[in-house]
Image (cartoon, rainbow, N blue to C red; front, top):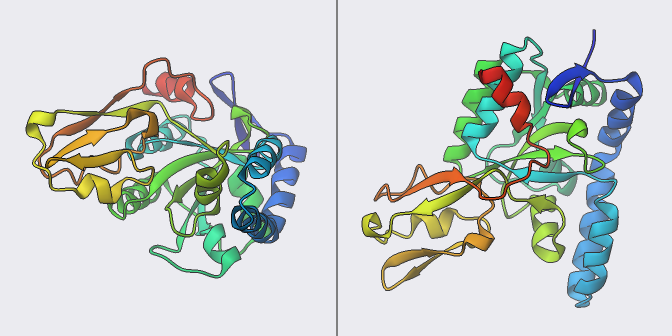
Length: 266
């Protein structure tokens, strides 16, 4: 059976070597996360963030980095690979929770895709196949929980996307590392747009935003657009229905396969 990767807006067979490399990383991911987590905590404790930032950029050339997207974008991707009859999706335990032995919210939420699904199933018996409808239902559930879908890739290459992680701010190591040093997560194709006249100042968006983009000023929300990564978790819980997602100006695709999804939709 062929396993697939994204290349030039298409799904093409991934080589056995690519599957084996991802399998090697998957087997060692818990140990890698523990080491990186301890290293990050150390440099933050000794106030050596400049060193941490350099390390983050160097390690990011090899280790996974992610692009944040909306749940709707993630669902569009699931629909695309379904239409193309290349539905390779599996789900298993959150690797950060597993490695760091902490729990918060849903545990079985690490969605691996394309060649990554085979690589992780080879490594862990906990990973089980999902059909498209199950995958979309899980993504919607995790959105309600306030988690942000993030397309992860190795080697900073769109051809190496292997997972849709559903990240939160308390345990998720990539998110915490990004907050400490940057160069781990990148904004996605969308950004929030607010109609201030409709805002009722409920503050739910402030609670939901992982990146601190929302603040209340005199009872009305204000958005720091430079901090909006485009996850959209603030949209469905906006009591005034004052916000929506719009396309990010000047967006250049990093990992999310915009071209692939657009072609499949057409």
